[in-house]
Each structure stands twice: as structure tokens, then as C-alpha cells.
Amino acid sequence: ANLEELGTYFTDRKLEDIPHFRRFNRTYKTIATAAEVVIDPGEVSEARWFTLDEVKTLINESSDMVTDGLVDVMSRYYA
Image 1 (cartoon, rainbow, N blue to C red):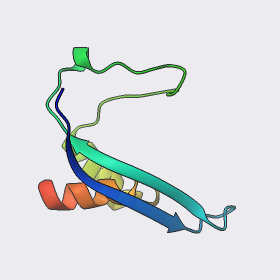
Image 2: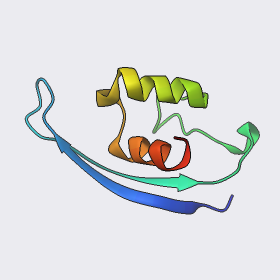
Image 3: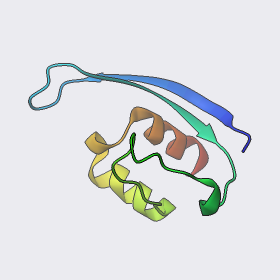
Image 4: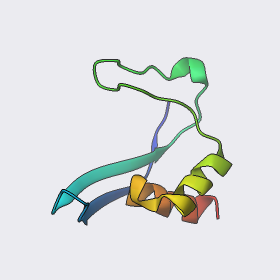
């Protein structure tokens, strides 16, 4: 699948037990079927699809559980 890069993000925030929770992430856009997405069980313990409404609810109710990149992409493309 062709990937279109949407943005690169850096997050540095304090969590309850972690003084500096740092992460980098990059977001991409593509069109793919579920059959084309292959999850490597050695790298990912669990994966599932989310509806747009589920993602919007997660951002609104638990924004500390999502990346800044996801918040930005959702506000730019799905507001």
C-alpha cells in the first residue's frame, strides 16, 4: 500500500510514576483492506480496528491514553 505521511510528533509528559514519558510517532494515511494488514505477534501483543466514533470518544474521555499525533490527525481530518 502507498503511504502518505501526515506528520511526525514528539511527546514528553509526566505520568503518575514516570517523570518523563517520551515518545516519538509518525502518522500515515493509506487505503487498505483488513486482509492486507499483517500484525507481527513478536512486536504487537494485541490489535483491533476502531470506528471513528470510538476514536473520538477515546480522545474526549481518555486523552492521556492516545498520542498527540492521533489527536492532531483527528482534529485536522475528522473534526
